Image 1 (cartoon, rainbow, N blue to C red):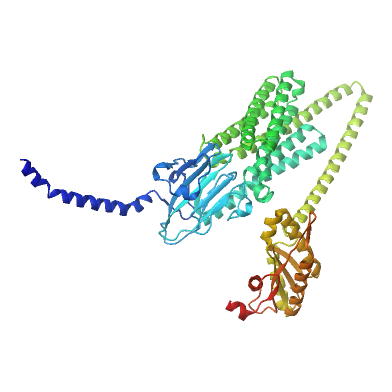
Image 2: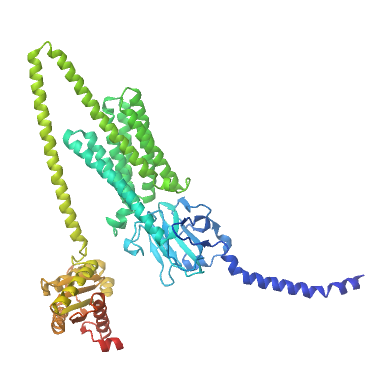
Length: 638
Protein backbone atom coordinates (compact mmCIF):
# COMPACT_ATOMS: atom_id res chain seq x y z
CA UNK A 1 0.00 0.00 0.00
CA UNK A 2 2.69 2.61 0.78
CA UNK A 3 4.49 1.81 -2.44
CA UNK A 4 1.25 2.07 -4.48
CA UNK A 5 0.43 5.42 -2.82
CA UNK A 6 3.82 6.93 -3.67
CA UNK A 7 3.58 5.74 -7.21
CA UNK A 8 0.14 7.33 -7.71
CA UNK A 9 0.96 10.76 -6.24
CA UNK A 10 4.40 11.44 -7.63
CA UNK A 11 3.24 12.16 -11.24
CA UNK A 12 0.57 14.64 -9.95
CA UNK A 13 2.98 16.70 -7.87
CA UNK A 14 4.77 18.29 -10.85
CA UNK A 15 1.39 19.17 -12.39
CA UNK A 16 0.27 20.88 -9.19
CA UNK A 17 3.53 22.81 -9.03
CA UNK A 18 3.14 23.85 -12.69
CA UNK A 19 -0.46 24.98 -12.09
CA UNK A 20 0.62 26.96 -9.03
CA UNK A 21 3.35 28.68 -11.03
CA UNK A 22 0.85 29.60 -13.79
CA UNK A 23 -1.59 31.03 -11.23
CA UNK A 24 1.19 33.08 -9.65
CA UNK A 25 2.16 34.43 -13.07
CA UNK A 26 -1.48 35.36 -13.80
CA UNK A 27 -1.76 37.13 -10.44
CA UNK A 28 1.38 39.14 -11.20
CA UNK A 29 -0.04 40.10 -14.59
CA UNK A 30 -3.38 41.06 -13.07
CA UNK A 31 -1.97 43.09 -10.20
CA UNK A 32 -1.82 46.37 -12.21
CA UNK A 33 -5.40 45.89 -13.34
CA UNK A 34 -6.52 45.07 -9.82
CA UNK A 35 -4.75 48.20 -8.56
CA UNK A 36 -7.00 50.31 -10.80
CA UNK A 37 -10.17 48.32 -10.10
CA UNK A 38 -11.70 51.17 -8.07
CA UNK A 39 -10.68 53.99 -10.40
CA UNK A 40 -13.15 56.86 -10.83
CA UNK A 41 -14.47 57.38 -14.39
CA UNK A 42 -14.22 61.06 -15.31
CA UNK A 43 -17.60 62.71 -16.02
CA UNK A 44 -18.78 64.42 -19.18
CA UNK A 45 -21.24 67.19 -20.01
CA UNK A 46 -22.67 69.07 -17.02
CA UNK A 47 -22.36 66.12 -14.62
CA UNK A 48 -20.44 66.52 -11.36
CA UNK A 49 -18.91 63.68 -9.37
CA UNK A 50 -18.03 63.67 -5.65
CA UNK A 51 -14.74 61.73 -5.51
CA UNK A 52 -14.75 61.25 -1.72
CA UNK A 53 -16.05 57.66 -1.69
CA UNK A 54 -13.40 56.67 -4.27
CA UNK A 55 -10.51 58.06 -2.20
CA UNK A 56 -8.20 56.34 0.22
CA UNK A 57 -6.62 58.16 3.16
CA UNK A 58 -3.52 57.82 5.30
CA UNK A 59 -3.12 60.08 8.34
CA UNK A 60 0.27 61.61 9.16
CA UNK A 61 -0.12 63.09 12.69
CA UNK A 62 3.30 64.75 12.66
CA UNK A 63 3.04 65.95 9.07
CA UNK A 64 6.66 64.98 8.32
CA UNK A 65 6.25 62.36 5.59
CA UNK A 66 7.19 63.34 2.03
CA UNK A 67 5.72 62.13 -1.23
CA UNK A 68 8.41 59.49 -1.81
CA UNK A 69 7.73 57.89 1.58
CA UNK A 70 3.96 58.03 1.16
CA UNK A 71 4.05 56.52 -2.31
CA UNK A 72 6.06 53.58 -0.97
CA UNK A 73 3.52 52.79 1.76
CA UNK A 74 1.84 49.36 1.47
CA UNK A 75 -1.83 49.23 0.47
CA UNK A 76 -2.71 47.80 3.89
CA UNK A 77 -2.18 51.17 5.64
CA UNK A 78 -4.60 53.01 3.37
CA UNK A 79 -8.22 53.27 4.45
CA UNK A 80 -11.26 53.96 2.32
CA UNK A 81 -12.63 57.48 2.97
CA UNK A 82 -16.24 56.47 2.37
CA UNK A 83 -17.62 59.99 3.05
CA UNK A 84 -18.44 62.01 -0.01
CA UNK A 85 -17.02 65.19 1.58
CA UNK A 86 -13.71 63.65 2.80
CA UNK A 87 -14.03 65.44 6.15
CA UNK A 88 -11.76 64.65 9.10
CA UNK A 89 -12.69 67.42 11.58
CA UNK A 90 -10.22 69.55 13.54
CA UNK A 91 -6.86 68.11 14.51
CA UNK A 92 -3.96 69.63 12.63
CA UNK A 93 -2.72 66.33 11.19
CA UNK A 94 -1.62 65.94 7.59
CA UNK A 95 -3.95 63.75 5.53
CA UNK A 96 -2.71 62.01 2.39
CA UNK A 97 -5.42 61.08 -0.09
CA UNK A 98 -5.03 59.03 -3.22
CA UNK A 99 -7.50 58.72 -6.05
CA UNK A 100 -7.35 56.66 -9.24
CA UNK A 101 -8.87 58.41 -12.27
CA UNK A 102 -9.80 56.94 -15.62
CA UNK A 103 -10.78 58.68 -18.87
CA UNK A 104 -13.30 56.42 -20.62
CA UNK A 105 -14.05 58.97 -23.33
CA UNK A 106 -12.74 59.14 -26.89
CA UNK A 107 -11.03 62.47 -26.24
CA UNK A 108 -9.72 64.58 -23.39
CA UNK A 109 -12.50 66.90 -22.20
CA UNK A 110 -10.37 68.79 -19.69
CA UNK A 111 -11.54 68.43 -16.07
CA UNK A 112 -11.42 70.48 -12.87
CA UNK A 113 -11.18 69.10 -9.33
CA UNK A 114 -12.85 71.86 -7.29
CA UNK A 115 -12.18 71.87 -3.53
CA UNK A 116 -15.19 73.25 -1.67
CA UNK A 117 -13.26 74.45 1.41
CA UNK A 118 -11.39 77.71 0.59
CA UNK A 119 -9.87 77.87 4.10
CA UNK A 120 -7.51 74.89 3.83
CA UNK A 121 -4.06 76.05 4.94
CA UNK A 122 -2.10 73.75 2.61
CA UNK A 123 -3.07 71.50 -0.27
CA UNK A 124 -0.44 69.71 -2.38
CA UNK A 125 -1.32 67.65 -5.45
CA UNK A 126 0.98 65.14 -7.14
CA UNK A 127 0.13 63.64 -10.50
CA UNK A 128 -1.53 66.65 -12.14
CA UNK A 129 1.59 67.44 -14.12
CA UNK A 130 4.72 65.34 -14.57
CA UNK A 131 7.01 68.35 -14.14
CA UNK A 132 5.24 70.34 -11.42
CA UNK A 133 3.62 69.85 -8.04
CA UNK A 134 0.46 71.82 -7.29
CA UNK A 135 0.91 73.75 -4.05
CA UNK A 136 -1.81 76.07 -2.82
CA UNK A 137 -3.96 76.94 0.20
CA UNK A 138 -4.92 80.03 2.13
CA UNK A 139 -1.51 80.01 3.86
CA UNK A 140 0.33 80.20 0.56
CA UNK A 141 0.44 83.18 -1.82
CA UNK A 142 -2.60 83.38 -4.04
CA UNK A 143 -0.36 83.68 -7.11
CA UNK A 144 0.78 80.06 -6.64
CA UNK A 145 -2.59 78.76 -7.78
CA UNK A 146 -2.69 77.37 -11.30
CA UNK A 147 -6.24 78.70 -11.76
CA UNK A 148 -7.05 82.16 -10.43
CA UNK A 149 -10.08 81.25 -8.35
CA UNK A 150 -11.27 81.89 -4.81
CA UNK A 151 -11.46 78.15 -4.22
CA UNK A 152 -8.73 75.61 -4.88
CA UNK A 153 -9.24 74.43 -8.47
CA UNK A 154 -6.97 71.67 -9.83
CA UNK A 155 -6.86 71.16 -13.63
CA UNK A 156 -6.84 67.59 -14.94
CA UNK A 157 -6.01 66.43 -18.47
CA UNK A 158 -6.09 62.69 -19.21
CA UNK A 159 -5.62 61.18 -22.64
CA UNK A 160 -8.36 58.87 -23.99
CA UNK A 161 -8.27 55.60 -22.10
CA UNK A 162 -5.60 56.86 -19.68
CA UNK A 163 -5.69 55.90 -16.01
CA UNK A 164 -3.77 58.01 -13.54
CA UNK A 165 -3.29 58.08 -9.79
CA UNK A 166 -3.70 61.45 -8.07
CA UNK A 167 -2.15 62.13 -4.66
CA UNK A 168 -3.34 64.92 -2.36
CA UNK A 169 -1.76 66.16 0.85
CA UNK A 170 -4.12 68.23 3.04
CA UNK A 171 -3.08 69.97 6.27
CA UNK A 172 -4.83 72.80 8.08
CA UNK A 173 -5.38 74.21 11.55
CA UNK A 174 -9.06 74.63 10.74
CA UNK A 175 -11.53 72.07 9.48
CA UNK A 176 -9.79 69.33 7.45
CA UNK A 177 -12.66 69.10 5.00
CA UNK A 178 -11.88 68.59 1.32
CA UNK A 179 -15.47 68.58 0.01
CA UNK A 180 -14.26 68.21 -3.56
CA UNK A 181 -16.25 67.80 -6.75
CA UNK A 182 -14.99 66.69 -10.16
CA UNK A 183 -16.38 68.14 -13.39
CA UNK A 184 -15.46 69.17 -16.91
CA UNK A 185 -14.16 72.66 -17.59
CA UNK A 186 -17.43 73.45 -19.33
CA UNK A 187 -19.42 72.43 -16.25
CA UNK A 188 -16.99 74.39 -14.06
CA UNK A 189 -17.54 77.57 -16.10
CA UNK A 190 -21.31 77.10 -15.91
CA UNK A 191 -21.15 76.49 -12.15
CA UNK A 192 -18.92 79.53 -11.65
CA UNK A 193 -21.32 81.84 -13.50
CA UNK A 194 -24.26 80.66 -11.41
CA UNK A 195 -22.25 80.83 -8.18
CA UNK A 196 -21.04 84.37 -8.85
CA UNK A 197 -24.59 85.45 -9.62
CA UNK A 198 -25.84 84.05 -6.31
CA UNK A 199 -22.93 85.48 -4.35
CA UNK A 200 -23.47 88.86 -6.01
CA UNK A 201 -27.12 88.79 -5.00
CA UNK A 202 -26.15 87.79 -1.45
CA UNK A 203 -23.57 90.51 -0.94
CA UNK A 204 -25.76 93.00 -2.80
CA UNK A 205 -28.58 92.31 -0.34
CA UNK A 206 -26.17 92.83 2.57
CA UNK A 207 -24.92 96.07 1.05
CA UNK A 208 -28.50 97.29 0.57
CA UNK A 209 -29.28 96.52 4.23
CA UNK A 210 -26.12 98.30 5.33
CA UNK A 211 -26.80 101.46 3.33
CA UNK A 212 -30.49 101.49 4.28
CA UNK A 213 -29.88 101.18 8.03
CA UNK A 214 -26.97 103.62 8.00
CA UNK A 215 -29.25 106.11 6.29
CA UNK A 216 -31.90 105.63 8.97
CA UNK A 217 -29.25 106.05 11.66
CA UNK A 218 -28.07 109.28 10.06
CA UNK A 219 -31.66 110.54 10.08
CA UNK A 220 -32.87 109.32 13.47
CA UNK A 221 -29.58 108.98 15.40
CA UNK A 222 -30.99 105.78 16.87
CA UNK A 223 -27.98 103.69 17.91
CA UNK A 224 -29.86 100.47 17.25
CA UNK A 225 -29.45 101.14 13.53
CA UNK A 226 -25.74 101.92 13.98
CA UNK A 227 -25.08 98.64 15.82
CA UNK A 228 -27.13 96.77 13.27
CA UNK A 229 -25.19 98.37 10.40
CA UNK A 230 -21.88 97.41 12.02
CA UNK A 231 -23.19 93.89 12.56
CA UNK A 232 -24.14 93.62 8.87
CA UNK A 233 -20.75 95.02 7.80
CA UNK A 234 -18.72 92.63 9.99
CA UNK A 235 -20.88 89.65 9.00
CA UNK A 236 -20.36 90.57 5.34
CA UNK A 237 -16.58 90.68 5.91
CA UNK A 238 -16.77 87.30 7.68
CA UNK A 239 -18.58 85.75 4.72
CA UNK A 240 -16.20 87.46 2.25
CA UNK A 241 -13.29 85.79 4.04
CA UNK A 242 -15.00 82.41 4.47
CA UNK A 243 -15.89 82.16 0.78
CA UNK A 244 -12.32 82.92 -0.35
CA UNK A 245 -13.02 86.34 -1.92
CA UNK A 246 -10.88 88.22 0.61
CA UNK A 247 -7.69 86.26 -0.16
CA UNK A 248 -8.32 86.68 -3.90
CA UNK A 249 -9.15 90.37 -3.99
CA UNK A 250 -8.19 92.08 -0.71
CA UNK A 251 -4.93 90.61 0.65
CA UNK A 252 -3.55 87.84 -1.64
CA UNK A 253 -0.08 88.04 -0.04
CA UNK A 254 -1.00 88.87 3.59
CA UNK A 255 -1.20 85.26 4.76
CA UNK A 256 -0.74 85.89 8.49
CA UNK A 257 -3.47 88.52 8.47
CA UNK A 258 -5.74 86.22 6.48
CA UNK A 259 -5.27 83.47 9.07
CA UNK A 260 -6.36 85.64 11.97
CA UNK A 261 -8.99 87.64 10.06
CA UNK A 262 -11.49 84.76 10.00
CA UNK A 263 -11.94 84.31 13.79
CA UNK A 264 -11.47 88.06 14.26
CA UNK A 265 -14.31 88.98 11.88
CA UNK A 266 -16.52 86.33 13.51
CA UNK A 267 -15.83 87.79 16.96
CA UNK A 268 -16.47 91.35 15.72
CA UNK A 269 -19.81 90.31 14.19
CA UNK A 270 -20.74 88.70 17.51
CA UNK A 271 -19.66 91.82 19.43
CA UNK A 272 -21.82 94.16 17.36
CA UNK A 273 -24.67 91.63 17.51
CA UNK A 274 -24.56 91.84 21.32
CA UNK A 275 -24.65 95.65 21.25
CA UNK A 276 -27.53 95.53 18.77
CA UNK A 277 -29.56 93.10 20.87
CA UNK A 278 -28.91 95.08 24.06
CA UNK A 279 -30.09 98.28 22.38
CA UNK A 280 -33.06 97.08 20.38
CA UNK A 281 -34.54 94.98 23.20
CA UNK A 282 -33.98 97.85 25.66
CA UNK A 283 -32.29 95.56 28.16
CA UNK A 284 -31.06 98.55 30.14
CA UNK A 285 -34.67 98.96 31.30
CA UNK A 286 -35.02 95.29 32.23
CA UNK A 287 -33.66 93.06 34.95
CA UNK A 288 -30.06 93.62 36.20
CA UNK A 289 -29.42 89.99 35.25
CA UNK A 290 -29.61 91.00 31.59
CA UNK A 291 -26.81 93.52 32.06
CA UNK A 292 -24.63 90.99 33.88
CA UNK A 293 -25.10 88.42 31.12
CA UNK A 294 -24.32 90.99 28.42
CA UNK A 295 -21.21 92.12 30.28
CA UNK A 296 -19.99 88.50 30.52
CA UNK A 297 -20.59 87.94 26.81
CA UNK A 298 -18.75 91.15 25.92
CA UNK A 299 -15.79 89.97 28.01
CA UNK A 300 -15.81 86.65 26.12
CA UNK A 301 -15.90 88.55 22.81
CA UNK A 302 -12.88 90.62 23.79
CA UNK A 303 -11.07 87.45 24.88
CA UNK A 304 -11.73 85.79 21.50
CA UNK A 305 -10.57 88.95 19.70
CA UNK A 306 -7.36 88.84 21.74
CA UNK A 307 -6.89 85.15 20.90
CA UNK A 308 -7.44 85.90 17.22
CA UNK A 309 -4.74 88.59 17.29
CA UNK A 310 -2.05 86.89 19.41
CA UNK A 311 -3.19 83.37 20.30
CA UNK A 312 -3.11 80.01 18.53
CA UNK A 313 -5.32 79.99 15.45
CA UNK A 314 -7.13 76.75 16.24
CA UNK A 315 -8.00 77.88 19.77
CA UNK A 316 -9.25 81.23 18.47
CA UNK A 317 -11.29 79.51 15.74
CA UNK A 318 -13.00 77.06 18.08
CA UNK A 319 -13.49 79.87 20.59
CA UNK A 320 -15.20 82.03 17.97
CA UNK A 321 -17.52 79.16 17.01
CA UNK A 322 -18.40 78.48 20.64
CA UNK A 323 -18.98 82.20 21.19
CA UNK A 324 -21.34 82.44 18.21
CA UNK A 325 -23.35 79.44 19.37
CA UNK A 326 -23.52 80.65 22.98
CA UNK A 327 -24.46 84.22 22.08
CA UNK A 328 -27.12 83.14 19.58
CA UNK A 329 -28.69 80.76 22.14
CA UNK A 330 -28.60 83.32 24.98
CA UNK A 331 -30.00 86.04 22.71
CA UNK A 332 -32.82 83.70 21.72
CA UNK A 333 -33.69 83.01 25.37
CA UNK A 334 -33.55 86.71 26.34
CA UNK A 335 -35.71 87.60 23.35
CA UNK A 336 -38.33 85.06 24.43
CA UNK A 337 -38.28 86.50 27.95
CA UNK A 338 -38.74 90.03 26.60
CA UNK A 339 -41.60 88.81 24.42
CA UNK A 340 -43.21 87.24 27.46
CA UNK A 341 -42.75 90.52 29.34
CA UNK A 342 -44.87 92.32 26.71
CA UNK A 343 -42.28 93.61 24.22
CA UNK A 344 -44.25 93.02 21.00
CA UNK A 345 -41.37 93.31 18.50
CA UNK A 346 -39.44 90.54 20.32
CA UNK A 347 -41.26 87.77 18.45
CA UNK A 348 -39.59 88.78 15.19
CA UNK A 349 -36.20 88.89 16.88
CA UNK A 350 -36.86 85.44 18.36
CA UNK A 351 -37.53 84.12 14.86
CA UNK A 352 -34.30 85.71 13.55
CA UNK A 353 -32.17 84.27 16.36
CA UNK A 354 -33.76 80.84 15.90
CA UNK A 355 -32.74 80.82 12.23
CA UNK A 356 -29.21 82.00 13.07
CA UNK A 357 -28.84 79.31 15.76
CA UNK A 358 -29.80 76.58 13.32
CA UNK A 359 -27.50 77.93 10.61
CA UNK A 360 -24.53 78.36 13.00
CA UNK A 361 -24.93 74.86 14.42
CA UNK A 362 -25.10 73.40 10.91
CA UNK A 363 -21.93 75.24 9.92
CA UNK A 364 -20.04 74.20 13.08
CA UNK A 365 -21.15 70.55 12.88
CA UNK A 366 -20.17 70.45 9.21
CA UNK A 367 -16.70 71.71 10.08
CA UNK A 368 -16.28 68.99 12.69
CA UNK A 369 -17.39 66.33 10.21
CA UNK A 370 -20.55 65.35 12.09
CA UNK A 371 -22.68 66.67 9.24
CA UNK A 372 -21.73 65.97 5.60
CA UNK A 373 -20.98 68.85 3.29
CA UNK A 374 -23.77 69.71 0.86
CA UNK A 375 -25.03 72.80 -0.90
CA UNK A 376 -27.36 73.40 2.06
CA UNK A 377 -24.75 72.96 4.81
CA UNK A 378 -22.08 74.73 2.77
CA UNK A 379 -24.22 77.86 2.50
CA UNK A 380 -26.19 77.40 5.72
CA UNK A 381 -24.67 80.42 7.43
CA UNK A 382 -25.23 82.58 4.36
CA UNK A 383 -28.86 81.53 4.07
CA UNK A 384 -29.48 81.77 7.81
CA UNK A 385 -27.65 85.07 8.13
CA UNK A 386 -29.57 86.59 5.23
CA UNK A 387 -32.92 85.42 6.65
CA UNK A 388 -31.96 86.62 10.13
CA UNK A 389 -30.90 90.05 8.89
CA UNK A 390 -34.04 90.37 6.80
CA UNK A 391 -36.15 89.53 9.84
CA UNK A 392 -34.19 92.03 11.93
CA UNK A 393 -34.72 94.70 9.26
CA UNK A 394 -38.45 93.98 9.33
CA UNK A 395 -38.39 94.18 13.13
CA UNK A 396 -36.59 97.52 13.00
CA UNK A 397 -39.16 98.74 10.50
CA UNK A 398 -41.86 97.53 12.92
CA UNK A 399 -40.28 99.72 15.58
CA UNK A 400 -40.66 102.68 13.22
CA UNK A 401 -44.28 101.80 12.57
CA UNK A 402 -44.84 101.40 16.30
CA UNK A 403 -43.36 104.83 16.88
CA UNK A 404 -45.55 106.25 14.13
CA UNK A 405 -48.65 104.64 15.65
CA UNK A 406 -47.74 106.06 19.03
CA UNK A 407 -47.34 109.46 17.42
CA UNK A 408 -50.75 109.18 15.75
CA UNK A 409 -52.34 108.18 19.06
CA UNK A 410 -50.71 111.14 20.74
CA UNK A 411 -52.04 113.37 17.99
CA UNK A 412 -55.52 111.91 18.54
CA UNK A 413 -55.30 112.69 22.25
CA UNK A 414 -54.19 116.19 21.45
CA UNK A 415 -57.14 116.65 19.11
CA UNK A 416 -59.50 115.47 21.87
CA UNK A 417 -57.97 117.98 24.24
CA UNK A 418 -58.06 120.61 21.54
CA UNK A 419 -61.83 120.64 21.64
CA UNK A 420 -61.55 122.06 25.11
CA UNK A 421 -58.41 124.16 24.65
CA UNK A 422 -58.55 125.86 21.22
CA UNK A 423 -55.53 127.98 21.82
CA UNK A 424 -53.40 125.06 22.97
CA UNK A 425 -54.47 123.09 19.89
CA UNK A 426 -53.29 125.84 17.55
CA UNK A 427 -50.00 126.06 19.37
CA UNK A 428 -49.44 122.32 19.20
CA UNK A 429 -50.34 122.17 15.50
CA UNK A 430 -47.88 124.95 14.79
CA UNK A 431 -45.19 123.12 16.75
CA UNK A 432 -45.92 119.91 14.85
CA UNK A 433 -45.58 121.78 11.53
CA UNK A 434 -42.20 123.12 12.58
CA UNK A 435 -41.06 119.66 13.58
CA UNK A 436 -42.19 118.21 10.23
CA UNK A 437 -40.38 120.95 8.30
CA UNK A 438 -37.21 120.37 10.28
CA UNK A 439 -37.40 116.61 9.71
CA UNK A 440 -37.88 117.09 5.96
CA UNK A 441 -34.88 119.39 5.84
CA UNK A 442 -32.75 116.84 7.68
CA UNK A 443 -33.86 114.12 5.25
CA UNK A 444 -32.80 116.31 2.34
CA UNK A 445 -29.47 117.05 4.00
CA UNK A 446 -28.81 113.36 4.63
CA UNK A 447 -29.82 112.52 1.07
CA UNK A 448 -27.37 115.09 -0.25
CA UNK A 449 -24.68 113.69 2.04
CA UNK A 450 -25.43 110.19 0.76
CA UNK A 451 -25.13 111.38 -2.84
CA UNK A 452 -21.83 113.04 -2.04
CA UNK A 453 -20.63 109.82 -0.42
CA UNK A 454 -21.63 107.85 -3.50
CA UNK A 455 -19.74 110.34 -5.66
CA UNK A 456 -16.67 109.93 -3.47
CA UNK A 457 -17.07 106.15 -3.75
CA UNK A 458 -17.21 106.48 -7.54
CA UNK A 459 -14.02 108.55 -7.53
CA UNK A 460 -12.38 106.00 -5.27
CA UNK A 461 -13.35 103.23 -7.68
CA UNK A 462 -11.72 105.16 -10.52
CA UNK A 463 -8.54 105.53 -8.47
CA UNK A 464 -8.67 101.81 -7.65
CA UNK A 465 -8.96 101.00 -11.35
CA UNK A 466 -5.82 103.04 -11.99
CA UNK A 467 -4.01 101.26 -9.13
CA UNK A 468 -4.94 97.92 -10.71
CA UNK A 469 -2.89 98.97 -13.74
CA UNK A 470 0.19 99.50 -11.58
CA UNK A 471 2.70 97.24 -9.95
CA UNK A 472 2.32 97.52 -6.19
CA UNK A 473 6.07 97.49 -5.44
CA UNK A 474 7.59 99.81 -8.05
CA UNK A 475 4.59 101.88 -9.08
CA UNK A 476 5.28 101.03 -12.72
CA UNK A 477 2.68 99.67 -15.09
CA UNK A 478 2.06 95.94 -14.66
CA UNK A 479 2.24 93.22 -17.26
CA UNK A 480 -1.45 93.35 -18.16
CA UNK A 481 -1.21 97.10 -18.86
CA UNK A 482 1.94 96.48 -20.93
CA UNK A 483 0.08 93.99 -23.12
CA UNK A 484 -2.75 96.46 -23.71
CA UNK A 485 -0.46 99.39 -24.46
CA UNK A 486 1.82 97.27 -26.66
CA UNK A 487 -1.05 96.40 -28.98
CA UNK A 488 -1.99 100.07 -29.27
CA UNK A 489 1.61 101.12 -29.91
CA UNK A 490 2.02 98.48 -32.61
CA UNK A 491 -1.17 99.65 -34.30
CA UNK A 492 -0.01 103.29 -34.21
CA UNK A 493 3.43 102.45 -35.55
CA UNK A 494 1.98 100.34 -38.36
CA UNK A 495 -0.43 103.11 -39.41
CA UNK A 496 2.13 105.94 -39.23
CA UNK A 497 5.05 103.81 -40.53
CA UNK A 498 7.15 105.08 -37.62
CA UNK A 499 9.74 102.89 -35.91
CA UNK A 500 9.00 101.25 -32.58
CA UNK A 501 11.50 99.82 -30.09
CA UNK A 502 11.11 97.33 -27.24
CA UNK A 503 13.74 96.99 -24.50
CA UNK A 504 13.79 93.95 -22.24
CA UNK A 505 15.84 94.79 -19.10
CA UNK A 506 16.93 92.32 -16.44
CA UNK A 507 18.85 92.98 -13.19
CA UNK A 508 21.94 90.77 -13.16
CA UNK A 509 22.44 88.28 -10.34
CA UNK A 510 19.38 89.56 -8.50
CA UNK A 511 18.96 86.31 -6.56
CA UNK A 512 22.35 86.95 -4.99
CA UNK A 513 21.13 90.35 -3.83
CA UNK A 514 18.15 88.72 -2.11
CA UNK A 515 20.31 85.96 -0.60
CA UNK A 516 23.03 88.34 0.59
CA UNK A 517 21.02 91.36 1.73
CA UNK A 518 17.48 90.03 2.20
CA UNK A 519 14.24 90.40 0.28
CA UNK A 520 13.57 93.89 1.68
CA UNK A 521 16.84 95.03 0.18
CA UNK A 522 15.83 93.33 -3.06
CA UNK A 523 12.59 95.32 -3.05
CA UNK A 524 14.56 98.53 -2.50
CA UNK A 525 16.82 97.64 -5.44
CA UNK A 526 13.81 97.05 -7.69
CA UNK A 527 12.38 100.45 -6.78
CA UNK A 528 15.78 102.10 -7.27
CA UNK A 529 16.25 100.51 -10.69
CA UNK A 530 12.72 101.47 -11.75
CA UNK A 531 13.33 105.08 -10.71
CA UNK A 532 16.69 105.34 -12.51
CA UNK A 533 15.27 103.86 -15.72
CA UNK A 534 12.13 106.01 -15.61
CA UNK A 535 14.18 109.20 -15.30
CA UNK A 536 15.91 108.48 -18.62
CA UNK A 537 12.71 107.85 -20.58
CA UNK A 538 10.50 110.37 -22.32
CA UNK A 539 6.97 111.16 -21.17
CA UNK A 540 5.63 109.34 -24.22
CA UNK A 541 7.60 106.17 -23.42
CA UNK A 542 6.15 103.39 -21.27
CA UNK A 543 8.01 101.43 -18.61
CA UNK A 544 6.45 98.32 -17.05
CA UNK A 545 7.52 95.65 -14.61
CA UNK A 546 7.41 92.42 -16.61
CA UNK A 547 7.89 90.10 -13.67
CA UNK A 548 10.45 89.47 -10.93
CA UNK A 549 13.52 91.58 -11.74
CA UNK A 550 12.59 92.12 -15.40
CA UNK A 551 11.36 95.40 -16.90
CA UNK A 552 10.12 96.27 -20.38
CA UNK A 553 10.42 99.72 -22.00
CA UNK A 554 8.21 100.60 -24.96
CA UNK A 555 9.66 103.46 -27.07
CA UNK A 556 7.56 105.19 -29.73
CA UNK A 557 9.25 106.74 -32.80
CA UNK A 558 12.63 105.15 -31.94
CA UNK A 559 14.81 103.28 -34.41
CA UNK A 560 17.45 100.66 -33.68
CA UNK A 561 20.32 103.14 -33.30
CA UNK A 562 18.33 105.31 -30.90
CA UNK A 563 17.24 102.30 -28.90
CA UNK A 564 20.83 101.00 -28.62
CA UNK A 565 22.04 104.42 -27.51
CA UNK A 566 19.33 104.76 -24.86
CA UNK A 567 19.87 101.20 -23.63
CA UNK A 568 23.59 101.84 -23.23
CA UNK A 569 22.79 104.99 -21.23
CA UNK A 570 20.44 103.03 -18.97
CA UNK A 571 23.01 100.30 -18.43
CA UNK A 572 25.78 102.77 -17.69
CA UNK A 573 23.62 104.91 -15.40
CA UNK A 574 22.55 102.02 -13.19
CA UNK A 575 26.10 100.66 -13.01
CA UNK A 576 27.31 104.07 -11.80
CA UNK A 577 24.44 104.58 -9.35
CA UNK A 578 24.29 101.74 -6.79
CA UNK A 579 21.23 101.34 -4.60
CA UNK A 580 21.52 102.90 -1.13
CA UNK A 581 19.98 100.69 1.55
CA UNK A 582 20.54 100.95 5.34
CA UNK A 583 23.99 102.56 5.14
CA UNK A 584 24.91 100.11 2.40
CA UNK A 585 25.60 100.63 -1.26
CA UNK A 586 24.38 97.69 -3.35
CA UNK A 587 25.92 97.56 -6.82
CA UNK A 588 23.56 96.70 -9.65
CA UNK A 589 23.92 96.03 -13.35
CA UNK A 590 21.58 95.53 -16.27
CA UNK A 591 21.47 93.10 -19.16
CA UNK A 592 19.37 94.54 -21.97
CA UNK A 593 17.93 92.90 -25.06
CA UNK A 594 16.09 95.00 -27.61
CA UNK A 595 14.32 94.92 -30.92
CA UNK A 596 13.35 97.90 -33.06
CA UNK A 597 11.84 98.58 -36.45
CA UNK A 598 8.64 99.36 -38.28
CA UNK A 599 5.92 96.74 -37.74
CA UNK A 600 4.91 94.84 -40.85
CA UNK A 601 1.60 93.24 -41.73
CA UNK A 602 2.34 90.42 -39.31
CA UNK A 603 2.23 92.96 -36.48
CA UNK A 604 4.51 92.99 -33.48
CA UNK A 605 3.01 92.54 -29.99
CA UNK A 606 4.08 89.38 -28.24
CA UNK A 607 6.32 88.44 -31.20
CA UNK A 608 8.52 91.48 -30.69
CA UNK A 609 8.61 90.84 -26.94
CA UNK A 610 9.90 87.36 -27.71
CA UNK A 611 12.59 88.77 -30.03
CA UNK A 612 13.72 91.26 -27.37
CA UNK A 613 13.72 88.45 -24.82
CA UNK A 614 15.90 86.31 -27.06
CA UNK A 615 18.32 89.21 -27.38
CA UNK A 616 18.29 89.50 -23.58
CA UNK A 617 19.24 85.85 -23.24
CA UNK A 618 22.12 86.50 -25.60
CA UNK A 619 23.23 89.42 -23.43
CA UNK A 620 23.17 87.15 -20.38
CA UNK A 621 25.05 84.43 -22.18
CA UNK A 622 27.66 86.97 -23.25
CA UNK A 623 28.56 87.82 -19.68
CA UNK A 624 25.71 90.13 -18.54
CA UNK A 625 25.95 93.91 -17.99
CA UNK A 626 25.65 94.55 -21.71
CA UNK A 627 23.23 95.56 -24.45
CA UNK A 628 22.35 93.25 -27.33
CA UNK A 629 20.04 94.08 -30.22
CA UNK A 630 18.06 91.37 -31.94
CA UNK A 631 19.79 89.97 -35.00
CA UNK A 632 17.70 87.39 -36.77
CA UNK A 633 20.55 85.37 -38.22
CA UNK A 634 22.61 85.18 -35.03
CA UNK A 635 19.78 84.49 -32.67
CA UNK A 636 17.89 82.12 -34.90
CA UNK A 637 21.06 80.17 -35.45
CA UNK A 638 21.60 79.99 -31.73
